[in-house]
Image (cartoon, rainbow, N blue to C red):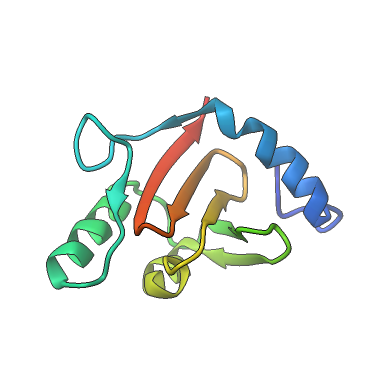
Length: 122
């Protein structure tokens, strides 16, 4: 298993470990069996609850470490799953964002159209 938190890894090293392998992801089911995407909108309590329930269904430990990669790969952010869930609106905003598990077992992709999907490397 790859540990993306290794302090010797530079941004370009992480990119080389992640980006070419994005085609090997099996995406989880989204809102129904026809799509892997789910609406990531905070416009009303119903949408927010659906998104939160979907994320909680992934049963990821709150202390699990993640890497947030914004659209240009120039700015990496290291947080925990619990921090992500507490601050969803600040991460699911108007830019493409990849959220990568520190052990590279899964990835979440957010798109500016307010949709998100979750997948695992095979």
